[in-house]
Image 1 (cartoon, rainbow, N blue to C red):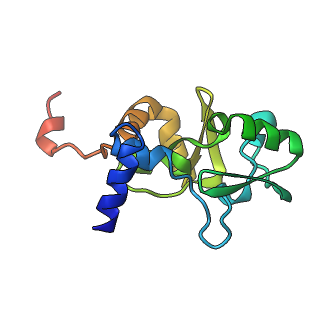
Image 2 (cartoon, one colour):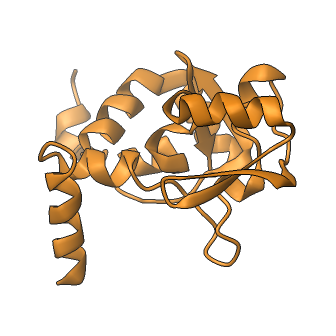
Image 3 (cartoon, one colour):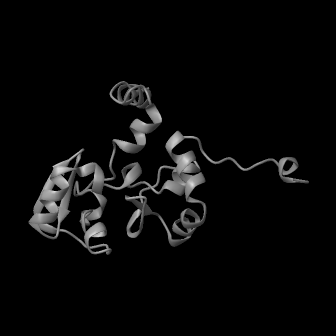
Length: 157
């Protein structure tokens, strides 16, 4: 019952779109540390094309998580426009999200596509995204899990 109320509240604050509220507003943060995306610097993915752990003391709080950075310049860039640097779908693996599973991505397995950062649970889901990204993004953004077709639907076509 509490989850239904939470989804309803998120939908109200997000123009009535509950699936978008769940995927875009709740960034993955470690429950024990409060660090978003495992303490990795989200700006570094764009600036140096590598996954780099941020440093303690160079942090910015945003959207329910503590974000760490390798330097103050990255922190300032993120603070100016966090939506540019934060991973899409809150850091959840988009392939698994399209399949109806909310699984945090691994900050070491990532891809930038069309100017957005995506994190993946495994190299296999990253590869799936690399080959079928448009379809994955459509399903993940719509909150519609990918359902296998019945055997009869795939025959003869």
